[in-house]
Length: 174
Image 1 (cartoon, rainbow, N blue to C red):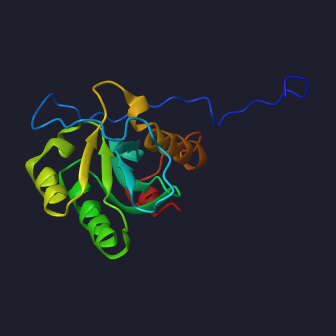
Image 2 (cartoon, helix red, strand yellow):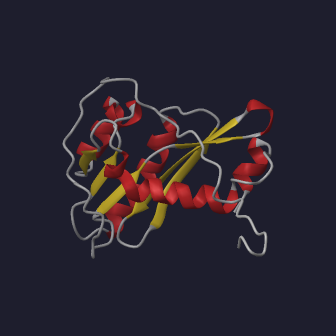
């Protein structure tokens, strides 16, 4: 690349990761996943997190996908302009319906310690539906590496190096 004067521009820009940690606002649970990211069983291990995209005119887009570690499939997601509780609850409800209909083994859902995932409504919904809750340790992004890797690839392929667009245009991007 140096001999031909080529330069990679897609993998140069680092972005600030959205951080929803506001201290301990609820119950922090143990890390059941313990970086064991492989599973041969569909819907046994799920991971989720929130990422932020900057848009044109100071707007932001927040994405919350739920990823199945069995095959890397996103089984549910939500996009909002603000990182509200609905951003995580709506895909959780969708994922629970899928789990009820298709899971053959008890599901574990792994997150970081963001306030959304410590919230009473999140915790209660998981318990009511017999889904194990798992959380990364504080300031240990490797505990949720599979989700962070998904965000990294997503942003490199369709966001970094591109001109900022409006919230609506970014939301419609494939």
